[in-house]
Amino acid sequence: MNPGWGVFQGGPCGHHRRRQQAVVLASTLLVLPACSPSASPQTSSISASDRAGRLASATGAPLPAASPWLRMQDSRSGVAVWPSGAAFLLIRTVDGWRHVTNITPIAVPTGGGLSMAMSSGQRAVAALPYHQLVDSPLLRGDSSGTSWSPGQLPGGVTLGRDSIGLGPRGFTAVLRDGGGTAVAKEGHGWSVLTDASRLAPGAHLHLDALNWGVGGRGWLTGHGAAGTPKAFTTGDSGRTWAPVGGLAADAVAALAPCGGGQAWTMPVVRAGGTISIAATADGGATWTAGAPLTVPRGAPAWGCHDQDVWILAGAGGGDHVYSSANAGRTWTDRGVAPGTVTDLEPTGSHTGFATTTTAGGAVLWDVRGDGASFSPIALPGWVASVENQTMSMN
Image 1 (cartoon, rainbow, N blue to C red):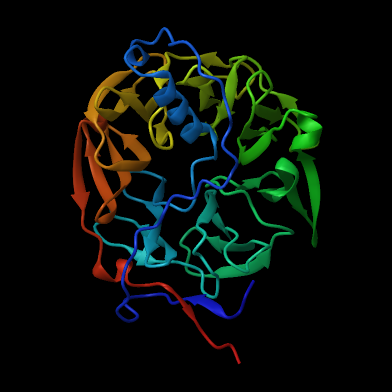
Image 2 (image 1 turned 60 degrees about the vertical axis):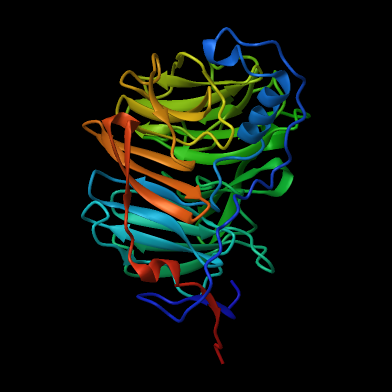
C-alpha cells in the first residue's frame, strides 16, 4: 500500500474536473474465427465482423471493476463502486439510494477500480493494480463499512469485480500471475489453492473470478479458447477442483455465478457469438443451459434475484435489456438499454437498479418492469468531487 495516496471520506474536498472513467479491458482479447450465424433469431442480420467484435468485447476480460457497479442485499440496502474524478468510491445506502454514505477505505489508491466480497457480517475490498501499485491492498470491514482493517495481497488481483471472495477458509483472491492464481489466507500467510496451468495445462486459460456457495462449494471462472473448460468447482473448500459439467463445449467465457443456497446462475459465452445462462438447483452438481441471446456490444452486464435474471444482449438497433423469470430458460425483450449499461441488479417484484456510463458520466437508475423503465437517481454533488488526493503521512 502506498502511504502517499488517500481517499478523503465524507463530503466535498475541493473542486476538481470530473472525467469519465474508461472501462478497463486489460486482458488480452481473444482472436477467434468468424462463425456462421447461430440459430438464435437475433443473430441473423448481424455481420460476421460485427459478431466477432461483440464476442471480443464479451470475452476479453471479466466484468470490469473500473466502471460503476452495484451489490444489493435487498431493495433498500447495498453498496456501489462509483467514479469520482480520477478515483473510485465505495458508497452505501440503506434506503434505496435516497441517501448515501461514503465508506471508501482511506489511504488506498482506487483509480484502478475496486473488487468486493460481502457476507452477512463482513465486507472485503481490494484495490486493483494502479500506477505504482503492484500488490493489491485488501481491507476487511464490518457490514456497515464504518471501519476497515488493512492488509495486503501477495500480488495484484485480476481486473474483475469478483476477484476476491469470502469463503470457508477466509479471504480468497485470484491474482493475475500465470493466467490466474487462486490464493487463500492461511493464518498469517497466503497459500495457493490452484492456478490456470494446473486446471487446464496449455489451454491459454485466464482465470477471472472466485465465488463461494455453502458447504465448501466454490467456483472459479475465466475465459480462453473454445474447446477447453472455462469454469471449475470445488466441494472441499478449494483443496481439489474439477471442471463444471454441462457447459457448452464451445464456451469461450464463463462469468462469475450469482445466487445463494442451492440455486445459482452462470452466464456462458459461446464461440458462435451467443450468451446464455447455465442454472443449477442442486448447489452446482448439475447445470442446465437456457435460451441463447446475442452477445452485447459492450460487456455483458447482468444480475439475478432468485429465479429472476436481467441481462444485456445484442438486438437490432443496439443493446437491449432482457429479463427472465425462470433462471434464463426463456427471455422477454424489455427494450433498448439507456447508454452503456455496466451493471443490472434486480431486487424482486420486477424492480431493481442499474448503472450506465454516458457522454455526461456515470448514472444510477431505478429500474421498473424488469427493465422496461429506467428513471435516473440523483446522487449528492460531493460524490462527483471526492477523489484520490496526495497526502503527506510524515
